Length: 295
Image (cartoon, rainbow, N blue to C red; front, side, top):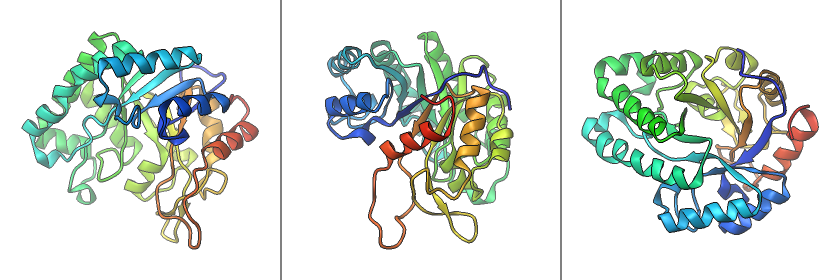
């Protein structure tokens, strides 16, 4: 696939990966060379959508004082089972988009993240977006309303593939969903490589990346070690991952499709005899050492 432009790519991480204390997390990220922030949770003890205006202004000032900026405001909107129905999605997700825009007016993110919906029938459905659009046409309509509301506020939406039966298990389903949405220029795709692996059973690869539609604008990285069947078996650092991290990241950087790459904590149980280790600082050093163009 081709991106918007080549160039230097910056790194970020979910804010809580640098610590639960928000000001200290900002300081730690700055010491690691992170200027672009991904705000999700543990912001003064709150998720990003639970912030009051006062808290959001306080966070925005702390960020500005450190010379940082918000790249993504990572909401949990739309990450829910379609089987819960139209009224549930309207009341629990679409109704909160306006609040996301209000907070974005204060925090000024590059993206407001929405998540892929899920289905309890994931294992039995191929071409999930198209099939579910026929069975639940209200879902695509609600995504369109959310995207339009975000755009009318002067912001950009991005949709990330999540785990737990999500409707985006491969590049073809990503293309299918974005064709249904028909909102070019207003919404992009965030590819979480490990999340897609968990749903599809296929480890991330250059071939999977190459098959992505040109709506890809943000990449999330986690490590992970495959079991004998190719499925994710253990969590790991990026350096210890069993999938070709560097090959994929080099292509992402060369294509310029993801101006910022976000590091996430790896899913899966720890390898036998090992406890959980937060690898984020080592992961950043690994990418900066081995991939030209990452800063």
